[in-house]
Length: 233
Image (cartoon, rainbow, N blue to C red; front, side, top):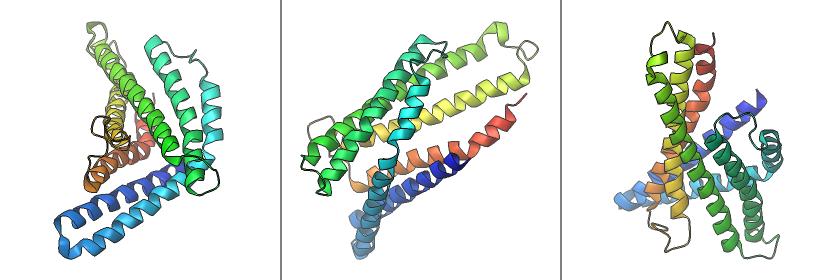
């Protein structure tokens, strides 16, 4: 329960930060008369982003415990889901220390090239998002095939609670897919110039994509309890 509340608080910080970047970017670019307000909002967004970076300094152990518990995904029946999940966990596990080193280099705690470590951490994040997108696409296809299968198409053959559970899972995977796509667009933007559209997004577009991703994540977090209750037998 505490972990869920903490995760929701983190998402609220993320959402507020990206909203400030969205509004601030629009004001700076489109409303010169309010550019000072926009600049302040962009500064606030930057500070909230820094806050999230500091909070992630304490995520390594939780990620390690999750990765260890999942292991090679022996409980997963689908081989593809197992493979991308294991690789995704590995990418997430490597992301954190890279970001920590980059943060410490910026703070002059370590003598290191922070730009290189930021790039590496962003690359691991992007890889994790790509794997998550592949997993969600696969799950949506498999679940929809199951729902449309003539053998289970009728309520008499598939209990209503089970059907609702499958439909809720499809919705969840679609929302996760959209959220990951928005984050992936930003992840590429933060890579070194020359990589696809890296560095080409204006602040308001970064804020828009981040806001969309954050709101989808908040919605899923809030609805998780409702879905669990609705799909209970």
